Length: 115
Image (cartoon, rainbow, N blue to C red; front, side, top):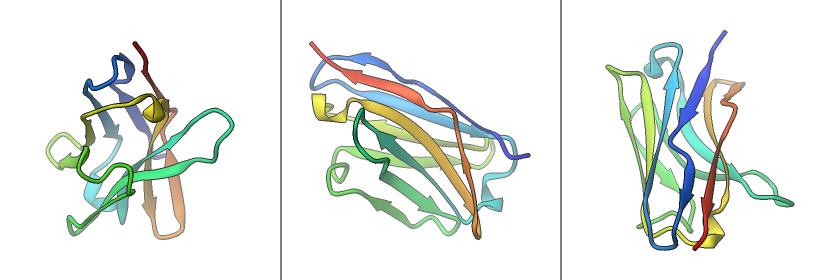
């Protein structure tokens, strides 16, 4: 059973930074893609950033230039560095991984941007 465990969320002031980390229970290169999604109250879950097994990355428009996704095969982690945070970034952030049509989700970590 694949497990994804997120950490690093919290309360940050506008303009601040946070680094989210997702540790997988198995080799991250077993997954076709890994990434981060977020869901704000009353809104649908949306893609933030993802990275495929070959290292190609994709970012949502709102994340481009502010967020960076990275991975560490030795630690089986995928991190999301978030800079220049605004109140619009307040949401629960979820780690995601897939192997073909099988999708796996973490339990989520809350990010709150507020002064």
